Amino acid sequence: MKKQVKGWIGFAEKDLLTVSEIIENPDLTNVVTFHCQQAIEKYFKAFILEHDNKPLLKIHNLLTLYGTIKETIDLELNEDLLSIVNDIYLESRYPGEMGLLDDGSMPTSEQANQFFNFAKEVEAKIKNELKINNKEE
Image (tube, rainbow, N blue to C red; front, side, top):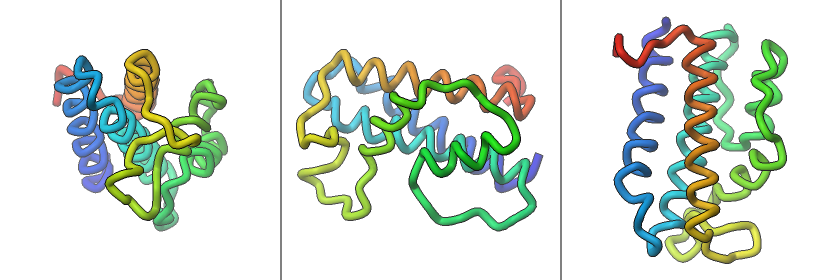
């Protein structure tokens, strides 16, 4: 596995560790949501780096990244949910907008948990495809 891929995986794991530490706090659902988006983006980039010999595009669009992955394998992800999580990323990164849903609302605790479970699903599928065993890390 390429060194750069390991770096992306490590940072994605830290995003999910952050989520696991704050998921129960209903005042931090936007932060949970933001870190879920970031973890998915990093897992996607790790996969692309490992399977594509081209330079990684500096983009944040999960749908575009997943489209690149689908050229190699279909992970059979819920693309409607992926689209919602995709809309969470903001180029501007204004503090008042970070992690909010497309309509500007705070995610509910239920939505935050749904995004966390989805991010963990992406993690499991990417690690499986990259032949990463958590016990070996």
